[in-house]
Image 1 (cartoon, rainbow over the protein chains, first blue to last red):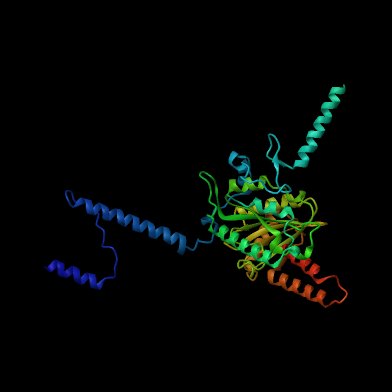
Image 2: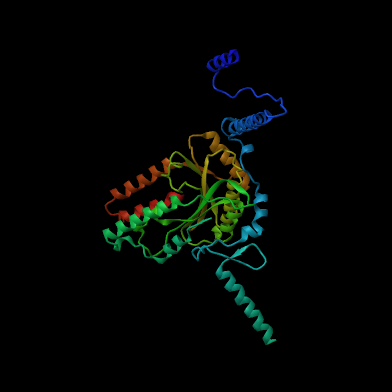
Length: 129
Length: 252
């Protein structure tokens, strides 16, 4: 009875917060709830920490918390296969491009036509020789 | 990725001459536009693909062009501007960028805009209305390289001004090209100074380069004043033409 009275008194005097977690691991039937409490405590603390980092930290607006890339890094990613895939829908002709063979530099339709014409001309000249 | 290239196809079809359409048609168009906007808002936000490099913010490419041969009076700035698509990762950005013409190869009165997703490249947008922009006028031949360096710095979060950056614009004009970077708070001098210095660094500008900061409220006042002046001139050209001319200045 005394124990229960003490508990009720504490309940009224202290603000709502988790009970102090003890790290004693009791072997037997009581061990399961202790481990679950420990897990809960770890989760609670980690959530509070993440919350602090996101919302309260003075570093919030600084570059350390931001995703930043250097120009060279971004350019290095330009040639990977994922970056070179054509978007699903073709844009208006005047802003759409086609890749030239083997390079990442995009070429307009007119440029491609010009190149093909030049090549044809070269081919004809070779045939004439 | 969120592609809206169909809108660009529509733009070139030349079927949007509002002068010839009846009021009912215009109402229909309005409701259709509203539906489109609702659909756009309902669409899921673009997310980085698996294994891709996420960006700090999602961005949207916009494109605007003053089509020759179309009556200028029917074109408002908002009607003229078209979304190309949105992206959330470095790879998704390159997919768009690699398939777009370089600004230096654009002809006529054209603009490319790259703004954070949810911010329209307009002075009136909530994110822009208290803001301003740094403007750099470039001689012909420099726009492509400067535009690339500018947007790479923006996507890579090189400006270090928190959430202040709204977007960037490259404007191709007859005798010169203009690049600008827009920020949220024009009154924040520390931020604007930091943007200016970063801009100098990333574009490798010579020290004597003229950089102009213009608040959007000043730009609006300037346009209103010009419209007023022209409207007071009895022998001026038709007001509507002048108004449309000025509304197209919003990207400058």
